Amino acid sequence: RIRQKRLLVASVQVVRLEVALLTHNHTDTLVAIVLLIVPPLKVPARDTLANLEAVQRLNRGGKLSLPQSTHRLLHTAAPRSSPRLGLKRSSANMTRQNICAALLLVCLVACVGPAASRITDAQVNKDDRQIILIARPFGFGPGGHIDITLANETMYRTPGSPKMDASKLGIFITTAEAETQLEADLGMEGSCILENKHVSALFTFQEIPSLKEDGVVKYSNKISEEYAGEYSLFFANCLEDTVVSFDIRVALYNVDASGSPDFL
Image (tube, rainbow, N blue to C red):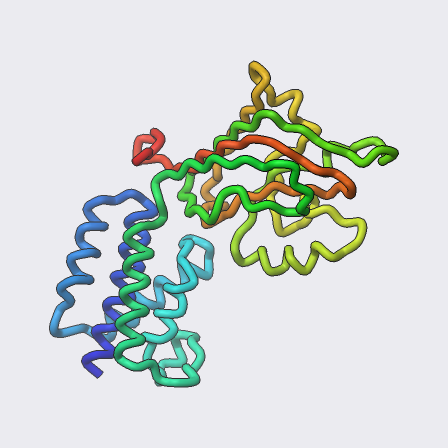
């Protein structure tokens, strides 16, 4: 029971740490780290359960964006005799080593993410894939930004192909949860991933002329509060017999309390 209570408290502190990092609250971040390293000997179980329920309510309401590892840890740490938490019974008991490893992994994830910023440089060279990952998952807080610079875009078509529809080439973002569904949708004939309800299209190559400055495409977007969360950025090619080349730079970053870019 003591180990279970300590694990419950650690789970709550991990979530507190993630929320503090997401909101760039340095004081709360320090407090959460200290409480993770030096947990209290006596744990008020009632308060801990209340905290867990509050966290779950926030997460269900879309107020938090927590990695799947944290959800699994909270599920494991929850008391088996507490149906009021809405958690299913675990099929097998985790060993002490597994619990410690899971907690350590989540702590590491929390300490390094969400990142304040990330810059990705990529070069696509005569590629005909339908979807190309450009920027791996990034945790956006409210007001997070996406800045894209794209240059040297070239499309190669098979001789005799119909006139190219540039609206079928473009950049989009999507959540990790939607990626599995996207893979299934790729096989649907006549559909284009840029029109899929599970993605947010940023721009298509049809819009490139209006986005160009000095021969370079420059695009910027701000993540609104209700859409804060973790997204990956992809290039989509919905045209048959079309090979594409381009150079791209993607800057993903959050903002500090004053609204200024929070670059590391």
